[in-house]
Length: 464
Image (cartoon, rainbow, N blue to C red):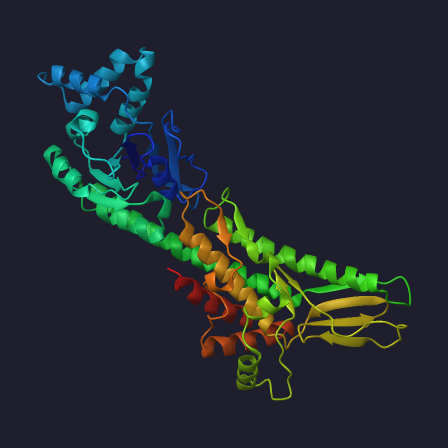
């Protein structure tokens, strides 16, 4: 164990999920993973890093090609007084110039240099001593803490048969996984299982600490994500876009361009927040597709709260019965579109004119400028931004880093988790309405952003 940063070596036949499990355990979607046999052709090392410190490292290996040759060498030399590791070091030294044995030598070096062995097996195949026996003999001979992970790759399951045979090689710690469905809870289970292996006090202390670090990692990710979402909402609610007019007449083209530019700015704010969340959770290469970009105005209203519920909650928060609360006209992926119900035209006067479309945004015409901003009564803006962010985050957390399929956020409302049937509880909804109003008015913004952050933090924790 070097510098209190132990190393795990992942071994097993090609295409048994070795690279996938490393991707999951390091929160890293940049580990090379493929369904094609033999993707890992040389030993590679990946580290789990927190706060610029290596917590532990993982060797990814290509799979033994000449295990029987190694086992014959061990048997022929086991009568010597050498320690087990010494015998294998001698094999490496004697065969270092043999091109055909380079892969196996790299695997042996990784095994000898590691503190823990993780053996990946396909439990959908029956145990075959002829194809796997030599590898099991080698691992048993090395006598290092070893965990066997069963990856059931089809409907067939021979786990019990494998466990019975592995016991003969003194391998007794097993855990069944699907690397492509590995989430943060499964990772905790693996470290817990490793902790039951017969190992040194130092190893057990490390594994206990690793579980603690992993749990803290999740808590920090939740905290960072809630801050990102809260700050995104603040930016949207504070956004004012000014469109300069060069004539006393407002044309339809002016209106379209002003609205489009306003929407683009909101789109960029929300898009950046999603990019930040993806990076927080370790997603850099997996593509995230949000099909809600095609939502119609009517469908998007359903993502918020109903007019009746908004009105009741609005009254409860002190908005008053005189406040006309109307759902937003339209929302699209990572941006907000608004419909103007009034026709803007005529000659600009000296006094600014307020034209409100669907109580969602407020458009101010003043000093030859069209100014767009969110209306303080449009509480559904914050509700919908929250729902979209939580849906996005839910998909990230549940996907897993080893699954290289695109993350798709569906268009169908019934397939969304945070859909029209899902609502914040009354206490949270009332608080969100109050927060929306104060942030739009820019009154005690810091206090209300913190209150919003606490609500989001609680909601994200419920995802796990």
